[in-house]
Length: 138
Image (cartoon, rainbow, N blue to C red):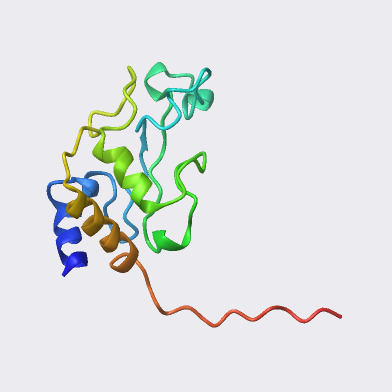
């Protein structure tokens, strides 16, 4: 039930799918979502390569397939849990002059935050992993 509600939020009110779309849940584009933009010297992001002002602080949208297995989150590893990630988006990111227009306050309730996190953990994961075996050393 919670994951179903979270899926509806992902594709609806929370608008996650505007950037996290397709089979691997990424648009392969670069966006400034505000992460680290409150630092004394924010990471230039794609601008360091493109030298375009509009690319300041932008990073490639990560794929979300099996996202629950890939903590920590964000380009700088600053968020340890998916709840922290959802809270970041719920607040509208960190305001800055280059913030992507797709980033806005979501106004999710605590229950909706929990439902969205549940969907990301359960609905975007696969259980078809081979059993991990430690290699034998000589």
